[in-house]
Amino acid sequence: MAIRYPIVPNTITVHLGKPDESVRNITVSFTDYISNVASSELYPTWPTSALTANIYAIISFAMNRIYNEWYRSKGYNFDITSSPIYDQAFKENRSTYENINNIVEEIFNNYVVKANQIQPYFTRYCDGRNTQCDGLSQWGSVSLANQGKSYLDILKYYYGNDISIKYNAPVGDNVEGYPGYEVGYGSAGNPVLAIQRDLRRIRKNYPAIPNISTTLGIYDDETVAAVKKFQEIFSLPTTGIVDKATWYKIKYVYTSVKKLSDLYSEGLSQNEATFLYEDELNYGDTGIEVEYVHYFLDAIAFLDPDIPRLQTNSIYNNNSVLMVKAFQEKYGLPITGVFTYSDWKVLRKVYQNVLKMISSENQEYINELYPDYFLKKGITGEDVLRFQRFLLEICRYDHSIPGVRVNGIFDDLTEQSVKKIQRDFGFDVNGIVGPLLWQKIVELSKR
Image 1 (spheres, one colour):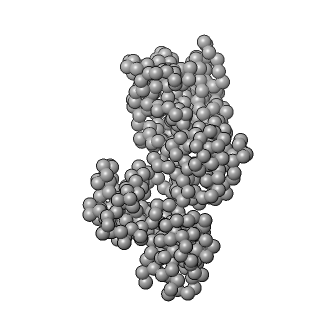
Image 2: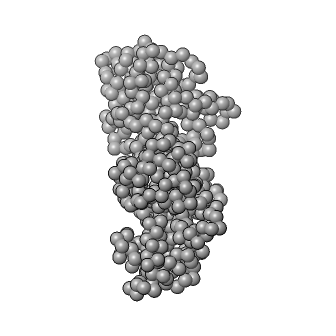
Image 3: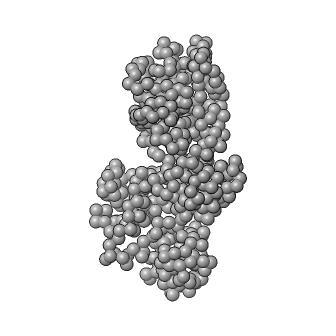
Protein backbone atom coordinates (compact mmCIF):
# COMPACT_ATOMS: atom_id res chain seq x y z
CA MET A 1 0.00 0.00 0.00
CA ALA A 2 1.21 3.55 -0.79
CA ILE A 3 -0.01 6.73 0.89
CA ARG A 4 0.08 9.75 -1.39
CA TYR A 5 1.42 12.35 0.99
CA PRO A 6 1.96 15.84 -0.43
CA ILE A 7 5.45 16.57 -1.74
CA VAL A 8 6.99 20.01 -1.38
CA PRO A 9 7.83 20.95 -4.98
CA ASN A 10 11.26 21.99 -6.16
CA THR A 11 9.65 24.59 -8.43
CA ILE A 12 6.35 26.41 -8.92
CA THR A 13 4.95 27.95 -12.12
CA VAL A 14 3.50 31.44 -11.56
CA HIS A 15 1.13 33.26 -13.93
CA LEU A 16 2.15 36.94 -13.78
CA GLY A 17 -1.35 38.33 -13.49
CA LYS A 18 -4.98 37.32 -13.06
CA PRO A 19 -5.94 33.84 -14.35
CA ASP A 20 -7.35 34.99 -17.72
CA GLU A 21 -4.85 37.77 -18.36
CA SER A 22 -2.62 37.28 -21.40
CA VAL A 23 0.69 37.45 -19.55
CA ARG A 24 3.76 35.26 -19.13
CA ASN A 25 4.23 32.26 -16.86
CA ILE A 26 7.55 31.89 -15.07
CA THR A 27 8.89 28.89 -13.19
CA VAL A 28 10.92 29.63 -10.07
CA SER A 29 12.19 27.60 -7.16
CA PHE A 30 9.62 27.09 -4.43
CA THR A 31 11.80 28.74 -1.78
CA ASP A 32 12.39 31.79 -4.01
CA TYR A 33 8.64 32.03 -4.56
CA ILE A 34 7.83 31.93 -0.84
CA SER A 35 10.54 34.51 -0.04
CA ASN A 36 9.25 36.77 -2.82
CA VAL A 37 5.62 36.61 -1.62
CA ALA A 38 6.60 37.07 2.02
CA SER A 39 8.79 40.08 1.15
CA SER A 40 5.94 41.54 -0.94
CA GLU A 41 3.27 41.13 1.74
CA LEU A 42 5.06 41.36 5.09
CA TYR A 43 7.28 43.88 6.89
CA PRO A 44 10.73 42.57 7.91
CA THR A 45 10.51 44.59 11.14
CA TRP A 46 7.59 42.48 12.40
CA PRO A 47 8.24 40.12 15.35
CA THR A 48 9.74 36.78 14.34
CA SER A 49 6.75 34.76 15.55
CA ALA A 50 4.39 36.89 13.41
CA LEU A 51 6.64 36.53 10.35
CA THR A 52 6.91 32.77 10.89
CA ALA A 53 3.13 32.33 11.27
CA ASN A 54 2.51 34.32 8.09
CA ILE A 55 5.15 32.42 6.14
CA TYR A 56 3.53 29.13 7.22
CA ALA A 57 0.25 30.49 5.85
CA ILE A 58 1.94 31.45 2.56
CA ILE A 59 3.60 28.01 2.21
CA SER A 60 0.41 26.07 2.97
CA PHE A 61 -1.70 28.22 0.66
CA ALA A 62 0.71 27.63 -2.25
CA MET A 63 0.99 23.91 -1.53
CA ASN A 64 -2.81 23.58 -1.42
CA ARG A 65 -3.02 25.11 -4.89
CA ILE A 66 -0.35 22.72 -6.20
CA TYR A 67 -1.57 19.56 -4.44
CA ASN A 68 -5.14 20.04 -5.66
CA GLU A 69 -3.95 21.15 -9.13
CA TRP A 70 -6.50 23.94 -8.74
CA TYR A 71 -5.59 25.85 -11.88
CA ARG A 72 -4.46 22.90 -13.99
CA SER A 73 -7.79 21.19 -13.31
CA LYS A 74 -9.47 24.29 -14.79
CA GLY A 75 -7.45 24.04 -18.00
CA TYR A 76 -4.61 26.44 -17.18
CA ASN A 77 -0.91 25.59 -17.53
CA PHE A 78 0.32 27.13 -14.27
CA ASP A 79 0.18 26.42 -10.53
CA ILE A 80 -0.73 29.82 -9.09
CA THR A 81 -1.22 33.46 -10.08
CA SER A 82 0.67 36.51 -8.90
CA SER A 83 -2.57 38.33 -8.11
CA PRO A 84 -3.42 38.78 -4.41
CA ILE A 85 -7.09 39.00 -5.46
CA TYR A 86 -6.93 35.31 -6.37
CA ASP A 87 -3.80 34.03 -4.64
CA GLN A 88 -0.70 35.76 -3.24
CA ALA A 89 1.32 38.83 -4.23
CA PHE A 90 4.38 37.90 -6.32
CA LYS A 91 6.60 40.48 -8.01
CA GLU A 92 9.09 39.24 -10.59
CA ASN A 93 12.75 40.10 -9.87
CA ARG A 94 12.04 41.89 -6.60
CA SER A 95 14.63 41.91 -3.83
CA THR A 96 13.89 40.00 -0.64
CA TYR A 97 14.74 40.48 3.03
CA GLU A 98 17.48 38.47 4.70
CA ASN A 99 15.56 37.65 7.89
CA ILE A 100 12.56 36.50 5.83
CA ASN A 101 14.84 34.39 3.64
CA ASN A 102 16.30 32.75 6.73
CA ILE A 103 12.87 31.79 8.07
CA VAL A 104 11.86 30.43 4.65
CA GLU A 105 14.99 28.30 4.40
CA GLU A 106 14.26 26.86 7.84
CA ILE A 107 10.56 25.98 7.35
CA PHE A 108 9.91 25.72 3.57
CA ASN A 109 9.22 21.95 3.79
CA ASN A 110 6.74 22.27 6.65
CA TYR A 111 3.08 23.11 6.17
CA VAL A 112 -0.19 23.42 8.08
CA VAL A 113 -2.70 20.53 8.24
CA LYS A 114 -6.17 20.44 9.76
CA ALA A 115 -7.35 17.70 12.17
CA ASN A 116 -6.87 14.25 10.54
CA GLN A 117 -6.61 15.61 7.01
CA ILE A 118 -3.47 15.15 4.93
CA GLN A 119 -3.79 17.85 2.27
CA PRO A 120 -2.00 21.17 2.93
CA TYR A 121 -4.61 23.33 4.64
CA PHE A 122 -6.07 26.22 2.66
CA THR A 123 -4.65 28.91 4.95
CA ARG A 124 -6.65 31.85 3.73
CA TYR A 125 -5.46 35.24 5.04
CA CYS A 126 -5.77 38.98 4.49
CA ASP A 127 -3.99 42.11 5.73
CA GLY A 128 -6.58 42.81 8.47
CA ARG A 129 -6.64 46.58 7.81
CA ASN A 130 -7.73 47.25 4.23
CA THR A 131 -9.44 43.87 3.86
CA GLN A 132 -11.11 41.52 6.30
CA CYS A 133 -11.68 37.78 5.80
CA ASP A 134 -12.15 34.49 7.56
CA GLY A 135 -8.66 33.25 8.29
CA LEU A 136 -5.46 34.88 9.41
CA SER A 137 -5.13 38.66 9.81
CA GLN A 138 -1.58 39.72 8.99
CA TRP A 139 -1.66 42.83 11.18
CA GLY A 140 -3.61 40.93 13.82
CA SER A 141 -0.77 38.40 13.95
CA VAL A 142 1.60 41.25 14.85
CA SER A 143 -0.59 42.20 17.81
CA LEU A 144 -0.64 38.60 19.01
CA ALA A 145 3.14 38.32 18.64
CA ASN A 146 3.58 41.46 20.70
CA GLN A 147 1.55 39.73 23.41
CA GLY A 148 4.16 36.97 23.49
CA LYS A 149 2.28 34.41 21.35
CA SER A 150 4.34 31.83 19.45
CA TYR A 151 3.85 31.22 15.71
CA LEU A 152 1.83 28.07 16.52
CA ASP A 153 -0.34 30.00 19.01
CA ILE A 154 -1.02 32.56 16.29
CA LEU A 155 -1.91 29.93 13.70
CA LYS A 156 -4.25 28.15 16.12
CA TYR A 157 -5.88 31.46 17.09
CA TYR A 158 -6.99 31.97 13.49
CA TYR A 159 -7.36 28.43 12.12
CA GLY A 160 -8.48 26.49 15.21
CA ASN A 161 -6.86 24.34 17.88
CA ASP A 162 -7.13 21.24 15.66
CA ILE A 163 -4.44 22.43 13.24
CA SER A 164 -0.88 21.12 13.42
CA ILE A 165 2.36 21.37 11.47
CA LYS A 166 3.55 18.65 9.12
CA TYR A 167 7.30 18.86 9.57
CA ASN A 168 10.06 17.74 7.16
CA ALA A 169 7.79 16.81 4.27
CA PRO A 170 9.56 15.17 1.30
CA VAL A 171 10.84 17.49 -1.42
CA GLY A 172 10.71 16.53 -5.08
CA ASP A 173 9.57 17.33 -8.59
CA ASN A 174 6.04 18.59 -9.11
CA VAL A 175 4.43 15.59 -10.90
CA GLU A 176 1.30 16.11 -12.97
CA GLY A 177 -1.67 14.11 -11.70
CA TYR A 178 -2.77 12.91 -15.14
CA PRO A 179 -0.88 9.65 -15.79
CA GLY A 180 0.05 10.60 -19.34
CA TYR A 181 -2.19 8.10 -21.12
CA GLU A 182 -5.92 7.51 -21.57
CA VAL A 183 -7.44 5.28 -18.90
CA GLY A 184 -10.22 2.98 -20.07
CA TYR A 185 -11.80 -0.45 -19.99
CA GLY A 186 -9.35 -3.06 -18.76
CA SER A 187 -6.88 -0.52 -17.32
CA ALA A 188 -5.65 -1.08 -13.77
CA GLY A 189 -3.56 0.53 -11.05
CA ASN A 190 -3.45 3.74 -9.06
CA PRO A 191 -4.90 6.01 -11.80
CA VAL A 192 -8.00 3.79 -11.90
CA LEU A 193 -8.24 3.78 -8.10
CA ALA A 194 -8.06 7.60 -8.08
CA ILE A 195 -10.82 7.88 -10.70
CA GLN A 196 -13.05 5.46 -8.81
CA ARG A 197 -12.46 7.17 -5.46
CA ASP A 198 -13.26 10.60 -6.89
CA LEU A 199 -16.40 9.47 -8.71
CA ARG A 200 -17.76 7.75 -5.59
CA ARG A 201 -17.53 11.03 -3.69
CA ILE A 202 -18.85 13.13 -6.57
CA ARG A 203 -21.86 10.79 -6.72
CA LYS A 204 -23.04 12.12 -3.34
CA ASN A 205 -23.62 15.48 -5.01
CA TYR A 206 -24.60 14.05 -8.41
CA PRO A 207 -26.61 10.89 -7.61
CA ALA A 208 -27.33 10.18 -11.29
CA ILE A 209 -23.75 8.86 -11.53
CA PRO A 210 -23.87 5.04 -11.07
CA ASN A 211 -22.09 3.51 -8.09
CA ILE A 212 -18.69 1.83 -8.41
CA SER A 213 -18.45 -1.11 -6.02
CA THR A 214 -15.12 -2.63 -7.08
CA THR A 215 -12.04 -1.96 -4.93
CA LEU A 216 -9.46 -3.81 -7.06
CA GLY A 217 -8.42 -0.80 -9.10
CA ILE A 218 -9.62 -2.39 -12.35
CA TYR A 219 -11.53 -0.30 -14.89
CA ASP A 220 -14.67 -2.42 -15.25
CA ASP A 221 -18.23 -2.04 -16.59
CA GLU A 222 -19.34 -0.07 -13.51
CA THR A 223 -16.48 2.39 -13.99
CA VAL A 224 -17.30 2.84 -17.68
CA ALA A 225 -20.94 3.58 -16.81
CA ALA A 226 -19.97 6.08 -14.09
CA VAL A 227 -17.48 7.87 -16.36
CA LYS A 228 -20.02 8.10 -19.20
CA LYS A 229 -22.64 9.63 -16.93
CA PHE A 230 -20.07 12.08 -15.52
CA GLN A 231 -19.09 13.06 -19.06
CA GLU A 232 -22.73 13.51 -20.00
CA ILE A 233 -23.45 15.73 -16.94
CA PHE A 234 -20.40 17.94 -17.59
CA SER A 235 -20.80 18.18 -21.40
CA LEU A 236 -17.75 16.11 -22.33
CA PRO A 237 -17.61 13.55 -25.17
CA THR A 238 -19.40 10.47 -23.78
CA THR A 239 -16.71 7.89 -24.47
CA GLY A 240 -16.37 6.12 -21.11
CA ILE A 241 -12.60 6.72 -21.45
CA VAL A 242 -10.76 9.11 -19.14
CA ASP A 243 -8.61 11.32 -21.33
CA LYS A 244 -6.80 14.41 -20.05
CA ALA A 245 -9.90 16.64 -20.28
CA THR A 246 -12.07 14.16 -18.37
CA TRP A 247 -9.33 13.48 -15.80
CA TYR A 248 -9.01 17.14 -14.86
CA LYS A 249 -12.74 17.76 -14.88
CA ILE A 250 -13.11 14.88 -12.40
CA LYS A 251 -10.27 16.37 -10.36
CA TYR A 252 -11.84 19.83 -10.36
CA VAL A 253 -15.32 18.60 -9.37
CA TYR A 254 -13.87 16.32 -6.66
CA THR A 255 -11.85 19.20 -5.18
CA SER A 256 -14.94 21.42 -5.33
CA VAL A 257 -17.44 19.07 -3.67
CA LYS A 258 -14.98 18.23 -0.89
CA LYS A 259 -13.95 21.90 -0.61
CA LEU A 260 -10.30 20.90 -0.53
CA SER A 261 -9.35 24.44 -1.56
CA ASP A 262 -11.50 26.04 1.12
CA LEU A 263 -11.05 27.15 4.71
CA TYR A 264 -13.95 24.91 5.72
CA SER A 265 -12.83 21.79 3.89
CA GLU A 266 -14.29 18.30 4.17
CA GLY A 267 -10.67 17.24 3.89
CA LEU A 268 -8.79 14.28 2.54
CA SER A 269 -8.10 11.46 4.99
CA GLN A 270 -5.17 9.05 5.01
CA ASN A 271 -7.45 6.22 3.86
CA GLU A 272 -8.61 8.25 0.86
CA ALA A 273 -5.00 8.92 -0.12
CA THR A 274 -3.89 5.28 0.18
CA PHE A 275 -3.45 3.28 -3.03
CA LEU A 276 -2.69 -0.36 -3.76
CA TYR A 277 0.47 0.20 -5.73
CA GLU A 278 3.75 1.66 -4.53
CA ASP A 279 5.02 4.75 -6.36
CA GLU A 280 8.64 3.66 -5.93
CA LEU A 281 10.15 0.18 -5.96
CA ASN A 282 13.60 -0.53 -4.57
CA TYR A 283 15.85 -3.44 -3.66
CA GLY A 284 14.09 -5.91 -1.36
CA ASP A 285 10.52 -4.85 -2.23
CA THR A 286 8.09 -7.67 -2.99
CA GLY A 287 4.59 -8.13 -4.33
CA ILE A 288 2.41 -7.75 -7.36
CA GLU A 289 3.83 -4.33 -8.28
CA VAL A 290 7.29 -5.90 -8.62
CA GLU A 291 5.89 -8.73 -10.74
CA TYR A 292 4.18 -6.24 -13.07
CA VAL A 293 7.44 -4.40 -13.67
CA HIS A 294 9.31 -7.67 -14.23
CA TYR A 295 6.73 -8.87 -16.76
CA PHE A 296 6.92 -5.76 -18.93
CA LEU A 297 10.71 -5.49 -18.68
CA ASP A 298 11.09 -9.13 -19.67
CA ALA A 299 8.85 -8.69 -22.71
CA ILE A 300 10.84 -5.64 -23.85
CA ALA A 301 14.19 -7.34 -23.14
CA PHE A 302 13.22 -10.30 -25.35
CA LEU A 303 13.26 -7.97 -28.36
CA ASP A 304 15.81 -5.34 -27.26
CA PRO A 305 19.46 -6.43 -26.83
CA ASP A 306 20.21 -3.25 -24.86
CA ILE A 307 18.09 -4.55 -21.96
CA PRO A 308 19.53 -7.68 -20.29
CA ARG A 309 17.02 -10.51 -19.96
CA LEU A 310 17.66 -11.84 -16.45
CA GLN A 311 15.82 -14.25 -14.21
CA THR A 312 13.29 -12.50 -11.98
CA ASN A 313 10.44 -13.31 -9.60
CA SER A 314 8.27 -11.34 -7.17
CA ILE A 315 11.30 -9.87 -5.31
CA TYR A 316 13.08 -6.71 -6.45
CA ASN A 317 16.61 -8.09 -6.44
CA ASN A 318 20.00 -7.42 -8.07
CA ASN A 319 18.71 -8.61 -11.45
CA SER A 320 15.82 -6.16 -11.15
CA VAL A 321 18.23 -3.31 -10.46
CA LEU A 322 20.38 -4.21 -13.50
CA MET A 323 17.38 -4.44 -15.84
CA VAL A 324 15.87 -1.20 -14.53
CA LYS A 325 19.18 0.65 -14.86
CA ALA A 326 19.56 -0.54 -18.46
CA PHE A 327 16.01 0.54 -19.23
CA GLN A 328 16.54 3.94 -17.58
CA GLU A 329 19.76 4.50 -19.53
CA LYS A 330 18.15 3.50 -22.84
CA TYR A 331 15.22 5.89 -22.42
CA GLY A 332 16.98 8.89 -20.88
CA LEU A 333 15.73 8.48 -17.33
CA PRO A 334 17.77 9.02 -14.15
CA ILE A 335 19.89 5.87 -13.80
CA THR A 336 19.16 4.93 -10.21
CA GLY A 337 17.97 1.32 -10.33
CA VAL A 338 14.97 2.50 -8.31
CA PHE A 339 11.74 2.14 -10.26
CA THR A 340 9.55 5.24 -9.96
CA TYR A 341 6.15 6.37 -11.17
CA SER A 342 7.87 8.35 -13.96
CA ASP A 343 9.64 5.16 -15.08
CA TRP A 344 6.31 3.32 -15.07
CA LYS A 345 4.77 5.79 -17.52
CA VAL A 346 7.69 5.34 -19.92
CA LEU A 347 7.66 1.54 -19.50
CA ARG A 348 3.99 1.38 -20.51
CA LYS A 349 4.59 3.44 -23.64
CA VAL A 350 7.60 1.35 -24.65
CA TYR A 351 5.64 -1.86 -24.13
CA GLN A 352 2.75 -0.53 -26.22
CA ASN A 353 5.21 0.34 -29.00
CA VAL A 354 6.61 -3.20 -28.80
CA LEU A 355 3.12 -4.55 -29.44
CA LYS A 356 2.67 -2.22 -32.44
CA MET A 357 6.10 -2.54 -34.04
CA ILE A 358 7.07 -6.17 -33.52
CA SER A 359 8.94 -7.59 -36.54
CA SER A 360 7.66 -10.36 -38.81
CA GLU A 361 10.18 -12.90 -37.47
CA ASN A 362 8.73 -12.41 -34.01
CA GLN A 363 5.05 -12.63 -34.95
CA GLU A 364 4.77 -16.03 -33.30
CA TYR A 365 6.06 -14.54 -30.05
CA ILE A 366 3.59 -11.65 -30.10
CA ASN A 367 0.75 -14.10 -29.62
CA GLU A 368 2.17 -14.80 -26.18
CA LEU A 369 2.40 -11.14 -25.15
CA TYR A 370 -0.11 -9.69 -22.72
CA PRO A 371 -2.32 -7.13 -24.52
CA ASP A 372 -1.79 -4.41 -21.87
CA TYR A 373 -5.31 -4.42 -20.47
CA PHE A 374 -7.24 -6.73 -18.15
CA LEU A 375 -9.48 -9.40 -19.64
CA LYS A 376 -12.71 -10.20 -17.85
CA LYS A 377 -16.17 -11.59 -18.49
CA GLY A 378 -17.97 -9.75 -21.29
CA ILE A 379 -14.86 -8.66 -23.24
CA THR A 380 -14.66 -9.83 -26.86
CA GLY A 381 -12.08 -9.71 -29.61
CA GLU A 382 -8.83 -11.09 -30.96
CA ASP A 383 -7.02 -10.91 -27.61
CA VAL A 384 -9.70 -13.07 -26.00
CA LEU A 385 -9.35 -15.52 -28.91
CA ARG A 386 -5.59 -15.74 -28.35
CA PHE A 387 -6.13 -16.31 -24.66
CA GLN A 388 -8.73 -19.03 -25.25
CA ARG A 389 -6.31 -20.93 -27.50
CA PHE A 390 -3.83 -21.10 -24.61
CA LEU A 391 -6.63 -22.28 -22.33
CA LEU A 392 -7.59 -24.97 -24.82
CA GLU A 393 -4.05 -26.40 -24.74
CA ILE A 394 -4.27 -26.64 -20.94
CA CYS A 395 -7.70 -28.31 -21.10
CA ARG A 396 -6.29 -31.04 -23.36
CA TYR A 397 -4.08 -32.39 -20.59
CA ASP A 398 -5.79 -31.08 -17.45
CA HIS A 399 -9.35 -32.37 -17.45
CA SER A 400 -10.16 -30.67 -14.14
CA ILE A 401 -10.45 -27.38 -16.05
CA PRO A 402 -14.15 -26.74 -16.87
CA GLY A 403 -13.39 -26.13 -20.56
CA VAL A 404 -13.34 -23.38 -23.17
CA ARG A 405 -15.11 -22.41 -26.39
CA VAL A 406 -12.60 -20.68 -28.68
CA ASN A 407 -15.00 -18.01 -29.90
CA GLY A 408 -13.40 -14.70 -28.91
CA ILE A 409 -16.02 -14.09 -26.21
CA PHE A 410 -15.00 -14.07 -22.54
CA ASP A 411 -18.06 -16.05 -21.49
CA ASP A 412 -19.12 -17.96 -18.36
CA LEU A 413 -17.14 -21.07 -19.33
CA THR A 414 -13.94 -19.05 -19.89
CA GLU A 415 -14.43 -17.35 -16.53
CA GLN A 416 -14.96 -20.69 -14.74
CA SER A 417 -11.74 -22.05 -16.25
CA VAL A 418 -9.81 -18.94 -15.26
CA LYS A 419 -11.05 -19.19 -11.69
CA LYS A 420 -10.03 -22.89 -11.50
CA ILE A 421 -6.48 -22.02 -12.58
CA GLN A 422 -6.39 -19.11 -10.13
CA ARG A 423 -7.35 -21.45 -7.28
CA ASP A 424 -4.78 -24.04 -8.34
CA PHE A 425 -1.86 -21.60 -8.51
CA GLY A 426 -2.54 -19.20 -5.64
CA PHE A 427 -3.96 -16.22 -7.51
CA ASP A 428 -6.86 -14.11 -6.29
CA VAL A 429 -9.97 -15.97 -7.51
CA ASN A 430 -11.73 -13.15 -9.34
CA GLY A 431 -11.94 -14.40 -12.94
CA ILE A 432 -9.87 -11.45 -14.18
CA VAL A 433 -6.80 -11.97 -16.37
CA GLY A 434 -3.90 -9.58 -15.73
CA PRO A 435 -0.29 -9.86 -16.97
CA LEU A 436 0.83 -12.35 -14.33
CA LEU A 437 -2.02 -14.77 -14.86
CA TRP A 438 -1.65 -14.39 -18.63
CA GLN A 439 2.03 -15.32 -18.30
CA LYS A 440 1.17 -18.35 -16.14
CA ILE A 441 -1.44 -19.60 -18.61
CA VAL A 442 0.95 -19.21 -21.55
CA GLU A 443 3.54 -21.19 -19.55
CA LEU A 444 1.03 -23.93 -18.68
CA SER A 445 -0.13 -24.19 -22.30
CA LYS A 446 3.37 -25.33 -23.34
CA ARG A 447 3.49 -28.38 -21.12
